[in-house]
Length: 69
Length: 152
Image 1 (cartoon, one colour):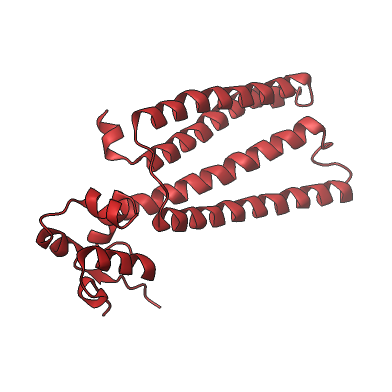
Image 2: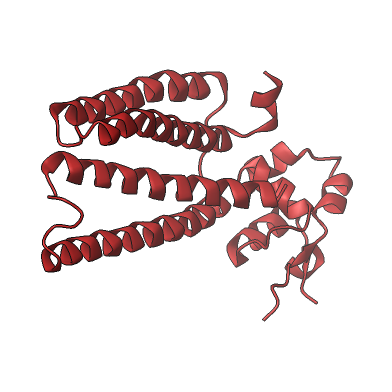
């Protein structure tokens, strides 16, 4: 089965959240900045727990932050 | 200093580990070949080389890892780090197992054909174990670096 990456809107959500920096988001989601970079580049699929944590940081539903096609 | 800014603390540590493996391999191979050529493979010189290699590895580790962890900020591991670590340990374990099977094969072959590979003396066993350790560690570092760089 072909590996599919979960798409995300993290970059847009950061911009809308007062241009939150990657480092700030990383701290709030309890991950490293490198993980946020990989997520924004759509090169890493987060665990369900991390996806929920990130959605919670932006106060949006999970499906607004992450999409799976 | 630019190099330090482009890589995370974790990646720098992996690079340092990889370079350590290369240094150990180069030093070890360059010293061991003259012994093999001169037929002194079982001599005390081999024990001396193994001890020197271990001492070099310890000194390098103290200096390089100490410098990296002083100059860059140490980060807590997250899920991505653990996933890449698991992937690399899997590769490392595979290399370790395959090498072990090869060594077992050599021992059996040796017993069957009256020591075609020579007697397995303690220095020779230590050398084989050192080579296996370096190989599996190199495999681990390369897998980790590949995964980290792939996602940037």
